Amino acid sequence: MAIGGLVSNRNFGSFIGSGKVCRGEQSVLLHRGDRSGIAFVHGNMFYRKLWIQKANGFLSGTYGQFLQSTVHLDENTLKPLSISPNGRRLISSISLYHCEKSHKVYPQQRRRGRFGCYSRPSPLPGSGLKPNGKERIGKKSGTCTYYKSEEFDITEAKVDSLSSPDGTNEAVLVGGDMLEAVPFWQNFPKRWVIVLLCFASFLLCNMDRVNMSIAILPMSKEFNWNSATVGLIQSSFFWGYLLTQILGGIWADKIGGKLVLGFGVIWWSIATVLTPIAARVGLPFLLIMRAFMGIGEGVAMPAMNNLLSKWIPVSERSRSLALVYSGMYLGSVIGLAFSPILINKFGWPSVFYSFGSLGSIWYALWLRKAYSSPKEDPELSKEEKQLIMGGSISKEPVKVIPWRLILSKAPVWALIISHFCHNWGTFILLTWMPTYYNQVLKFNLTESGLLCVLPWLTMAAFANIGGWIADTLVSKGLSVTSVRKIMQSIGFLGPAFFLTQLSHVKTPAMAVLCMACSQGSDAFSQSGLYSNHQDIGPRYAGVLLGLSNTAGVLAGVFGTAATGYILQRGSWDDVFKVSVALYIIGTLVWNLFSTGEKILD
Image (cartoon, rainbow, N blue to C red):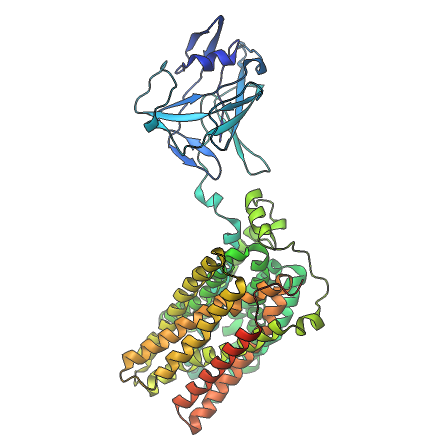
């Protein structure tokens, strides 16, 4: 905090030592021993709101509550000034910072003093400045001040706000006015601004992805598409999605995550808006447009992983990733909930136009607020930069990807295999769940659609719960390796257990509960394998995510197709047995070969 006052006197220390304060534009003769001086205080020395914020050192008071200060100075350090006719006055600019208990100022501490603020119910001009115990504001620790005096030409009472590179804040009080409080959103950590913007991008990602699963029904009627054509359209998204997983990671690690993620969002948003036009032109154009959309969404996860590896310290890694990935789950919920409403009121093209246009709003915020690394952000405070860089390595651009080194590491292959095993079960549940509800549990299509939202909500909730648990364990001293193994074991064995119970439940309600619990425990993987890319190779986090997610997408493609084949010759129990077997394999591989330590530099 900075406090300034207008004082004209032969000795400023005489004024402070007298313990008297003048109101309005009054001057009072002050005495201290054989010295005397005139104190001049212009305007009000009060704040409208009494508050204190320790982090930034702001302090203020209110009208009606008399703000008093006691300052001890070496009187020889201040030059005497007087009020001149042209309004030239002494302005004392004071920068405050919090320190340990310091209630005394020793003679050798020239220009250093103590500032204490106390509140009285009613103004008592001329009263002493001794505080009592009940009136102390803030903690017991004192607040130290540095003072400097300069001459300024004052034409009117106003406040000039000054900022310094080290994160402190100063203000010059002219005419007795005080610096207004800084809004809380300006002090919101910049690293969490990046996390929230990534969350919003993933929200849009799944909104734009799942809208086709709803819009395809009226589209197939309008264009007379058969089931084979519908399946071809749905799968065309993965053509582009698979293509840019590894490429997106390479680009992000070399040129920065901001550019790559921004490109991805704009690319898939344009493709979403152009989808209705492509559908009316012809089927080949629609297939190309869906593949283009997959290209844009394919770079999102590697770019996000690269960004968070630079912005988030390890103590916050799990919860930040969990929040971002929960954006995907909530995006599916919003897409599935609002698409039918828009289609019924405005027709199926409205889904693509409305969802796709949201990307432009996000992109405008992204350009203004996001940076690829903390070093590039000029507005980042010194304290936050130290916190971030203290929890990660110096992030220099990657020029060459060491493929031989990366693929020679067992923990990298543990990531790839575990991602495959995880996504096999996840994609099957999310893709075939409506069919299971309809054929086995005998729910109608409307009920099946509503119940499809439940696992997404469950995953969003438990992903964040798991993230907080994982970060708490790390902060308590448990090794990152142990935390990753614990969380991923829950992400594997939890779904495996609940899937085995489906053949034993007797009521549809219990079956839905088992499915929801299966997906909820699956979400703990966000604090397991999905956080591990940044652990083992933060400089190559984008490439590592691209590698493992390629395996995960292939598991989704093959697993979805294999499920249809199994159901033609077997039952749902056989489908679940395959998933459980892969979950167990993934658990063994993960616990034997994974690590939370950095192995790639």
